[in-house]
Image (cartoon, rainbow, N blue to C red):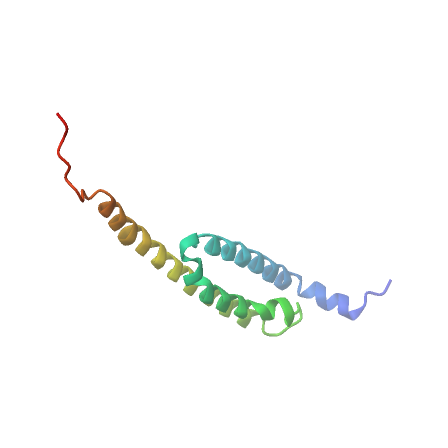
Amino acid sequence: VEIPESAKMILLQEQKFKTYNHELSFFLKEYRRVTQSVKPIATNLMRPHMENLEFKMRPGLVILTWTSMNIEAYLDEVWKELDRLEQLVLAVNDLMESRIDANLKIVANVLLVNLPEEQ
């Protein structure tokens, strides 16, 4: 049985395709992890940044195929954008936890009116 040339070419590139598949799967896990770490109260603040990342991801959903020549450039770009988003999410979460939440707890414990005790 003669093996078609296209099948031989795919077999020669099997490891490269498996690597792409693994990296894309890992990227999606990291994307979910980062987007789920956004606190609900900060969702509206983070929405433009998440939409920007989704815009950068779009070619992987629409244009790219396994035979595309620019998969590596695509992966580099989406990883960089995900790293930017993660740094922003970490900074916003840290700000909310260490400054805003802490100050709200202090304000909540402030005694506004000193009422005399009944005897």
